[in-house]
Image (cartoon, rainbow, N blue to C red; front, top):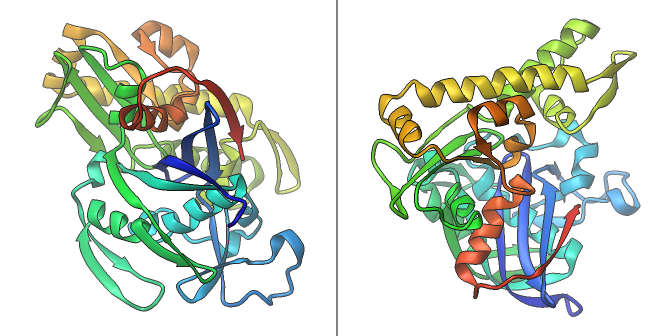
Length: 337
């Protein structure tokens, strides 16, 4: 860690598919994502060598994280477990820091609005069971953790997802922010420059792009007669062509069809609530962001007047960083780790 560069703040968006990170380094705004993939091993002598040796020792087990972990589907920890983003965010943050040789003083983490104040149960790998609000639990786990015998301590700030997008796009006076994640869709309503609370700002669980992945899995199963698990289908959302069941499959037209139906579903859901429909009809400014915004078909975007920020999956972390640092433009370097 001696050659790791100290930075003031690392802003992260802890998603079910990717951990996104943003920080400033030598005048540049760095944007990085790593897969939210954590593979667990009982020891680090499992016959693996080199880059695939489990080299993260955390709470009594050994792990691979990020891109390398994707090679071990049977050992991947299910990201849809309610406590995954609490227990394993330290592992993912460590992997991001190690890959980029940075050591922040403060770390910002985020939670879906629908889960922000939710009471959850955490099954700690060390055999403990903990209960509490998700925002407090994730703060506790990230603020102090030990990996490979090193103790990491940070000042931790916890933000609700979606709010960062509003900050990123310049805090418009009136807007509807739709943050499409892997599992959740968060709605943030802004009126008169203030975030509107009860009845508006909310979140939908199990309505994120996991629904697209589930449909994609069923489509591929029809073509190959082979079962497809959701973890594999989630990875395929990032691919245009795959080989599965002995067949080469062009996913692009399948994904376009699925995306059109899925985005129409989201808009129907928004318009199904009178208070939300009235807000949209009155103010008209609708902003889609988050990783799922990459799948918005152009015809949907144009017909409904939807705005999408540049690199929408990084919108939250850019906004969090903007809120916590002095305002000012910086060069931007983007990397998909």
